[in-house]
Length: 586
Image (cartoon, rainbow, N blue to C red; front, top):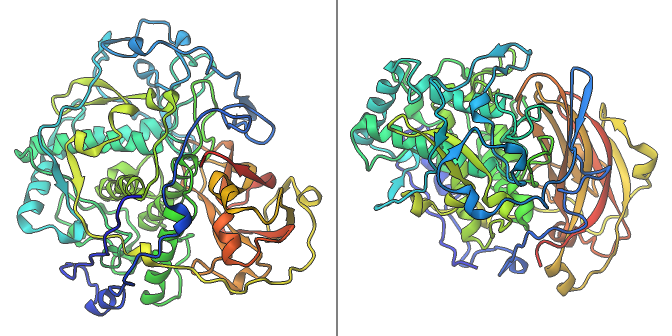
């Protein structure tokens, strides 16, 4: 386990954030309260019988398009392409069906994306795609520092404004224009690309709800930043990060509020311009005090980054291979706070919360890049806390296409973006105060009321709060068993509309959710969808780690636990849930 630094909370914020709030949260214990059982975490990603790459009734992802369901056809893991074949120039004339399981878009066949109302949108990159595209491998000679947005100075801000002004003035035919850069997210998230080799099946490549979420967005921001450097005339320039995981950053950064600035976007929630950000936002503003919201935010970050991220699959998301239907399952940070922040910023007066509140339009708001820089920073922090990246070749050799600062199309691989210093950037050290936050159980060792079993309730549409009694596969596990495998609540067959905002919360051993909240151990987290693609029915899953939670609730020796699902928005249909062991910690 890497050594942990005490939190650094600056009071040099240009937001209307009272110094009393900073002071309130700047006190920390003499030693970090990071759970001891996480020390030396080891994550491996070898295939197993429970590997989500193998389709089963519970894990196979599917999408229903216009009433039809497209299921995963077969697993291509055993048709691997030699490593050498993945390097050098990429020819679009090659036979994609001979490719292995790593994902890649059929970039040359980009087609109209769709908004949530099925309206076609041309988000494809401008220009003609060359017959061969070189592979790009970063060769950084220096490391620039991405700064917290609330701490930047006027000189830095002037450079960012200069870059975005120039990008906004570029012709739409230039892939470096701000419009073209915004459309990158639209094309990759709203059905603009089929998977290479699966055009006939119309299997799309969606970069959300899977293990490619983090690496795609890291590459996306990398090239956006290099384009900014070009038009700022400064190769040391680095984009900012919205430090929403620290009290001084839990407000919309002031650099985005000037309506005369190129960093401004009119489609934002005007009620949130001065309010504290709610990392558990469900579409309704909380009545809690600013202090309470900040406290809950810090606890949420601890849960998502530590308690719920004990395996690579939990943090990054589930595997997504060529030939799979999209949306196999999102990781912790993608679900919350990533999705919640998107929705919190977007304009509720727009039909789908545009700009930030819908993925096809999110890149049009400069806040998007600042938000995702902090999401990317979470990957670095998770690694520093002992979390280990996938070693699976299917993940490492998944690839994407981007235009660089010279308007040249290049192909990039996941394996070349795992170290940000090799990419030429790092993040300002502003501390991680949430590391010292702890949730509290509303009640420990509680006598649980009777409830129906999952088999008696599911499948069902989640239209009201549902509580079920779930049998555990084993109780009173030894310390060694807990270190080897994570006990997991797996909610499978979540069928939802991709074009709608969807959220439901999950509680354990809590039959009265109104008495709990993010600050309580009983609150595990939730499932949340930001509109992406057009309205269609997709099937995914969501898992929650239980080992530490059961210990804190005094329920480690229970045969059965209660699971409560609370709908917060559009309804979903759920096939079932169960408790199992995930041995990828071993």
